[in-house]
Image (tube, rainbow, N blue to C red; front, top):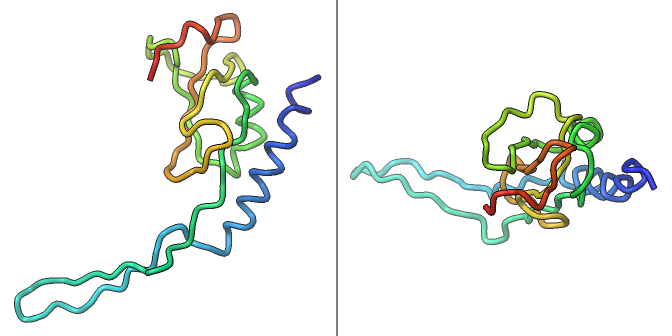
Length: 130
């Protein structure tokens, strides 16, 4: 089974989540009151904030370059060397995904999504714990 076949369901879910999220903001409405004589500014949060509906696709073990090609327009992501050596990930095609923050199938509440990667020839078991 190819990585592309494994990524299709996850990408479809991510795409659908991003399409449904287009009409809704994950940031609650915050009306700002005009300053009073004391110079204080009062803020109010919406009683019913709209939830984030996108989740991280499960691409653990897949090629980082392929993941980037297939998700880059839909997901704000970065790749970090999971070995702890701080190596730059100049060509994601030479790396495989070992972990993600947030984890696979977890709701995205903050961007960018961070994928921990190792060189294709290395083992993900050698990653530095987060």
